[in-house]
Amino acid sequence: MDLNANRTVVGRRARLPLTVVLLGFTSLLTDVGTEMIFPLLPVFLTETLRAGPAYLGLVEGAADAVSSVMKLVTGVLADRMPRRKPLVLFGYGIASAVRPLVAFATRPWHVLAVRLTDRVGKGVRSSPRDALIADAAGDRAGRAFGFHQAMDNAGAVLGPLLATALLGARVTLRHVFAMAIVPGVAATLLAALVREPPRERAARGSPAPASGGDGDPRAPGASPLADPRLRSYLFILALFSLGNSSDAFLLLRARSAGLATAEIPVLWSTLNLSKVVWAYLGGDMADRVARARLIASGWLVFALVYFGLGFATASWQVWTLFVVYGIFYGLTEPVEKALVRDLVREDQRGRAYGAYNFVVGFTALPAGLLAGALWHAFGPTVALGAGAALAATAAVLLLGWHASGSRVARDVPR
Image 1 (tube, rainbow, N blue to C red):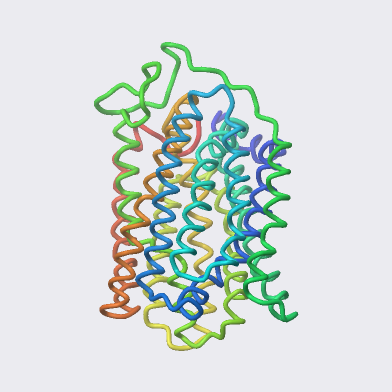
Image 2: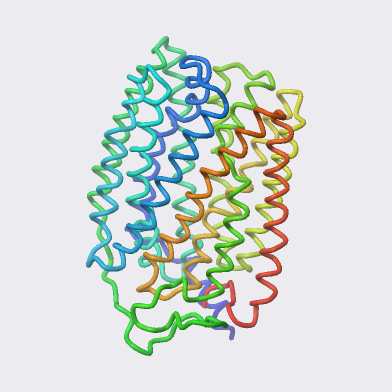
């Protein structure tokens, strides 16, 4: 009997640990608050505060860049501290407190300041939280990250719908932003209930994923980046991320294609409903098939959607492409994190997820500036087409990475 297959079947049938479930619902509530604001932010910035597309790219890119630095730092701390939970709790708390302050913004730089502080909170919690989920999940890492991503996206469905209902009840835009504090506080209280599973520090000479190159990631205290497989994976991920500018640009494109302001939150909820379904399916598939292939498939879907939105002229085309866009998220976000877990040892997970989140977040700044500059100079077709080209190139490289390393590092969990 194939031990790997048997372990997968058992993992799929078993319930997810309570730690994973609580963190999932914490993420759901956090995203309800976040997504009451985010889909309306491009319109608020460009129409109310009179900022241009380039400034929108600056806000989102800078916010993600700051977040990525914090993710790198707290990833290191998460491996050195005896417990990961304090960082997770602090990160949720600070973001929940500052996010609603966008309601008081009267200048574009006010929004920038709020977004930067909000993303600091996200940066503090993300790497320790991902490592905590990986610790608790065991062989069910794909399913665990898929569940967490699905709950995250469920919050992103509910948040815009709640915002739309409030706007329909004639609540002002600024008051909608201020009311985002309620789910944020609830999320922080729920995070306080999370129990951290005990960790075992890897002993000298303990087994670890094969590196297949120079450096020795097995050595006690060694950086996970000593493994060339992880380094090359992160390089390819960075290339893709350069074309993955903020989804705020897609919402701006939807607006320019003829959607009314009141339709934007509903469109965003529709996208996130698609994400809910595909995140769970993608996480489940990641425990059964090669993870790199799933990620590459998702990147190709991304390229198709970006290319299509660049040429979209009717609202039905926008709605269709946004639904398809959810497939990209399901095949990438939870699967990428599960693949990181495969490549490193337990005592390296905080730093590995810090490096992963740093790459994804830090490249958001040049990605946002590039998209904003291309949009301003040549229009949305060229800006989105450039993102599609980078995604397709990264997908091809990742498939080559998987083929070259299939003998050394298997993508299906051991």
